Image 1 (tube, rainbow, N blue to C red):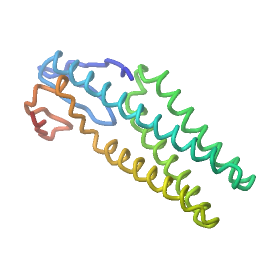
Image 2: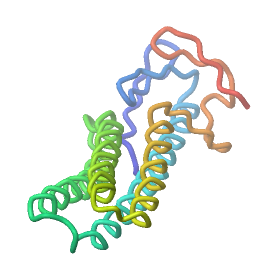
Image 3: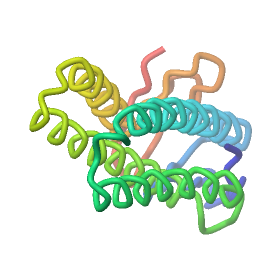
Length: 179
C-alpha cells in the first residue's frame, strides 16, 4: 500500500491525516517517515488479510459439498466482497480521500471473514464435522487477532518511527512512541 503523501505545513509543524486522525510532526522528514511506517503497516495488514481470505476460501471449498444452495451462494458473495475490497484498496489507496478508507475497508473485510467463518462453524457444528470445525475455530482466532491489531494502529516499524520516538501531537493530545 502506498498512501497519498498529503503533508500540510501548519505553522512550524507538519500535519498528516490518516485513519480519521490528524498527526502533527516536527519536520517534513518525520512526516515522510511516519507515512512510510503507515504504508508498511497497511501492507502487512492487507497481506495477512489476503492469507486469511485464502484460508477461508479453502475451507469454503472443502465444505461446499455439504452446504445448502442458499449458504453456498451467500458465503461466496461475502468472500467476493472481501476480495473486491482488497483490490479496490490496492488500486485507490493513493487517492487523496482514500487514506482513511483503507483502514475502514480493512476492518469491514476482517469482520466479513469472521462472519463467514462463524456461519461455516455453525453449519459444521450442526452436521457434526469435527475436523472442519476445529480448523474454522483456528481461523476465527486468527481473524480476531488481526482485527485487534488493526484497531490499535500501533505499528512498530523500527526504521520509520515518527520523530524517532519523540513526543508528537495527535489531535492536541501527547503520545509517546516507545523506542
